[in-house]
Length: 275
Image (spheres, rainbow, N blue to C red):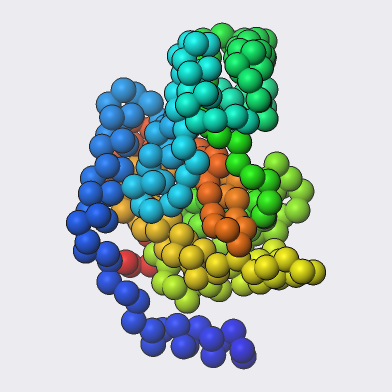
């Protein structure tokens, strides 16, 4: 009865109109160009660098990332960003970098960065094939304080795009603390998606830890929902981990998959809820 009455209240809410600002329009144009470029190249996977550009276009904060095609470039970017740094595989074909040893953390000098390059190149060559190694990305090592979340979208055959939010990190499949929702979200629906997870209790503040900015998290979910609703060529998108603390939020890694090139526009799954 409570859930029924709650659903009735939602029916009477008037959602905010889409953001008509020039910034939002420009962001949508940037996202469309990124996706169009990848599709013209015959790719269904955006690189991590492209994925973070896509998120930034919708106001989702990401860690500054640079692509290096040589060891010298990797060292140059690391010294420009400042140590310690994270070195990751740069590939247009592999989606899960950790499975092939493609993520190396906490390097504090140029020698260590060169070793990270060699380790990633060797590991990828042994586990997947050297053709998948194009270089590395370099980013500043983020502070570890806070909670790791996951925010993703995938296509369901019945409902079209479905959003997932919850506890993230490498053990997301183990904890299985996630909630599902349908885009487009309103602020109320975004808050309810957050409240359905167990990690919500920690986000409110627990055992001396300060609460995170839940209003800002709601806005991030709204931006992500708008991304999924507007960019229909996206088949899957994962933000994992999305690091959140009282100091702010940062998407540390992102993965975006597009629909295959042979997919016709009228075959794309529509939203279950009319925007």
